[in-house]
Length: 212
Image (cartoon, rainbow, N blue to C red; front, side):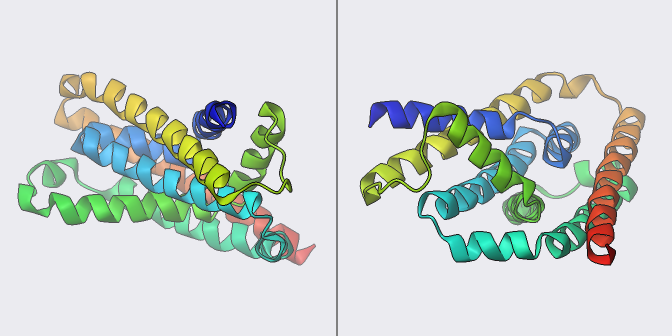
C-alpha cells in the first residue's frame, strides 16, 4: 500500500512538471497576484488530474472511449477555451489587479481553480500522460484494486500534483517583489500570448482532425 502511495506521488509530480499552458498561467498569476493565485490555478489542474486518474483506475472505458472518439472536438473546444483565457491575460491590467479589494480574493481564487480545472480537463493529452506514468512506475491499469487502495493512489497523485504547484508558486513568489509594474504588464502580454498560441495550436489540430 505504501509502495503504491509513493508511486502515485511520482505520477502526480511527473504529470505536473512539464510546463504547458498551466505552468505559464501559474507563473503569470503568481507574479501578478501572489502565491495563492498561482497555487489556485495549480489546484484546479490537480483536481482535473485526479478526475482523469479515477477514470483510469476504475477502468471507466465508456468515458475513456467517449474522450477518444471525440478527441478532435475536445481539442477544438479546449483550444478555443485556452485561447480566450490567454487573450484575457494578455489584455488584463496588472495595476488594476493589484488594486482590487482584498475581500474579493475568495471568489477570485475559486475562479482561478475553475480556470485551472477547465484548461486541464479540456486537454485529453493529460489522460494519456497519466496512463504513461502509471505504466512507468508500475501501477497496473485494469487490476482489481480495492476502494481503499484506489483512494490511496488518488491521494498520492493529488499530493504529488499539489506539491509541485505549491513549490512552483512559492519559488516564483520569492522573486515577485523584484518586478515593476511595467515589467508585470509585459509578463501579462507575453504569457497571455503564449497561452493563446498554445490554444490556437490545439484548436487547429482538432479542426484538422475533424476535416481529415
